[in-house]
Length: 394
Image 1: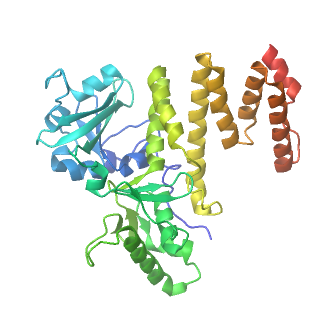
Image 2: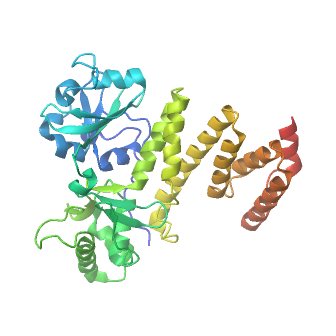
Image 3: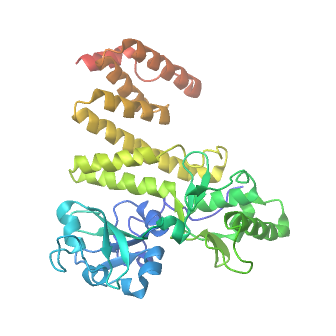
C-alpha cells in the first residue's frame, strides 16, 4: 500500500522554510535535510557575518546566544590562530581562503570546540560546524552519539564500538531503518502502522509502540527505566531520530559530495578533488542495501546513488584533466559498476580502455554491456564498439 507522506528531498523548495532557516538560501534542496540532521552543531552565517540559521545540535551546544541575528565574532570569539577579533573573522577568512579546515578554538563562553567553515557561494553564506573538543577522550564516546552506517549493509556503532545487529531485520530494526530513510522529519505513528502493520487494524498502534520500545532498549540497554531515549524521540504523535545524537553516514557522504561539487563549480579543483575523494570513500554501497525490496527505501537510495554518480564523474574528469588515465579509469570503472545501464558511463569507460591500448578489456566490457542492455530492454545499445573506436581515434 502506498503511504502518503511528505518526501524529505525531492519536493523541497530551493531554500529551507523560513521558520527553520531564517532566510538560508542553500543551493541544493538536499542540503535542507542534511543541515537539520547533522550530528554536529552547524550554523549558517550570512554575508554580514550574522547567524541566519542553526540546527538542533547548535541550539543545544550554544543555547539562545546562537539565535538568528547574532554576530559570528561575538558568538565564536573568532580566536583563530594569527587572527584578532577583527581580521580573524570566521566569515571573512572562510571566503578569503575558500574554506577553513578544522581547528580548535574557544567560544565566547570559554568552551573549546573544533571549528570548520565552508562558503556556500562567493560573497554569500558560510556553513560552520562545531564539535566539542574533549581532552583525553573521544568526543563521540563522551557525547553518546549513535552511528548508523546505512551505506551498504546496515551497521550500528556507539562509543567507537560496533553494536549487535542481528535484530536489524526484525520489526524494531526495520522501524529504525525507516526513520533513517525519513530523517529530518517526524514520522507519524499512523504512517508506521501503514508500512509495517497494515493488516493489524486497531492493534497496529500498539504494535508500533512496542517496536519502538524494543528499539530503544536495543540501542540503549543501560538506560534507566522511565528516562527518555537519547536516540529515538517521540514528537507530535510520531517519532524521529534525535538531531545531534544520531550520526548517519549518508549525511556525511552527502555533505562531502556537495562541498566538492560546489568547490568544482567555483573553480577550486584541488579542494574539490579532496572533498570528492572523501565522498567517494564514504560511499560504501547503496543506501540500506540489506533492504533491496523495500519500496520505502528506494527514493533515498536512488537519490544518493545519483549523487555518487556525480561524484565519480567529476573525479574522472579531474583525473583526465591531470593526464592521469589510470586514475580516471578507476573512477569510471566504479561508476560503470554503480550504473550498469548508463550507456554514457559505459561508453566513456570503453573509450578510455581503447585509448590505453586495452582492446581485449574494451571488447569484454562492450559485450557485457550489450548482454545486460538486451536482457533489460530487448534491444541493442545505441552504439557499437566500432563507434567508440572511431571516436577514440578522432
